[in-house]
Image 1 (tube, each protein chain N blue to C red):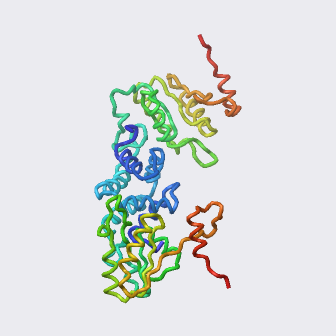
Image 2 (cartoon, rainbow over the protein chains, first blue to last red; image 1 turned 120 degrees about the horizontal axis):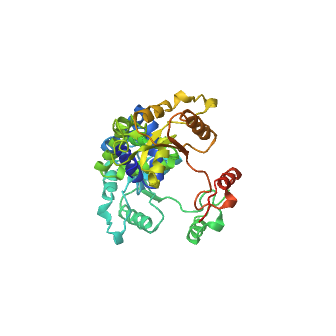
Image 3 (tube, chains in turn blue, brown; image 1 turned 30 degrees about the horizontal axis):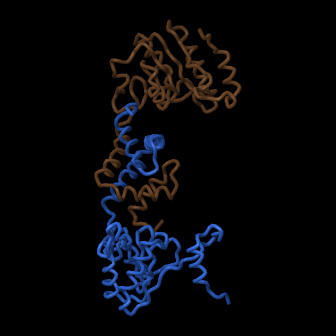
Length: 200
Length: 200
């Protein structure tokens, strides 16, 4: 290190702390900052602090938000009778990007995992019931991951929602579009066969 | 884009402007900032501004520095009778890392390139003469790159320093250590043969 002025060393160290950024890359990124116009670097610097200060969980759906209520929950054009339950904010983002869902989300903040000490009260499950009781929810789509934790979380939620008179669905498993069957695992193949549909 | 809160979108865009950082990586880095402790993110943010505010060129050698005079020029333990001339601050860094030079540096800020309009007055050449006249310089080592621009810059500097009664040397060309001859270009092979030394 000591080869750079102290301020530059500090910036290189900060870049090197980021995931997937080694020392050489950190040097290159710091040099890039050095060459940037001052305004651009200042905007970069401020945006780091802004994210830390502003981002919180939406009080309704628990996704990432700049405000008390997120842009989706606050949007009157969204279908507020359908709730899509996901584990993490990133899961919500991929569903949003697909453009296939126009209802509201509910982010659990994780999946049940008794082995890791994550029990029903550690994720936002009772908040689903509160939302159903408060709003006219017609359908709950459970879109937790299809691994063991996600499946058992889906089962648990389906069970506790059974008493509510609403449709409860689970996102479908099957062959990913563009996938080749020879590379797909047997459990997925079995699920895809079980869920086969009639072509008419 | 619109899938993230505005502050997060801003940070992702800033990361995506860095060289070699695509949108997916920018998303990952921004999420990492989100999970960082506030103090760490704040230090990162400040270090960007600090670099922009503090870094300037050393008044003596024109390397990057936090102060008027850089740490090397200000170090009384450096041998101030030897001057190593390089094109860029990054060249100085690699020589420093090698630990093989204990004198002072002189950063030209580029190489002569009439095709690109870079003439002797556009880089710090006359400042070399000023330093030689002011200090007791015994040797000047010209360590510009070994490409066409670097070589002609070295020739030019050697010519204008001829009248000074000092030793003028050029960093050696040859086979890189650990290199395999079959992968080395012919000009380098020729240079390495010309510069062969007797083993005794």
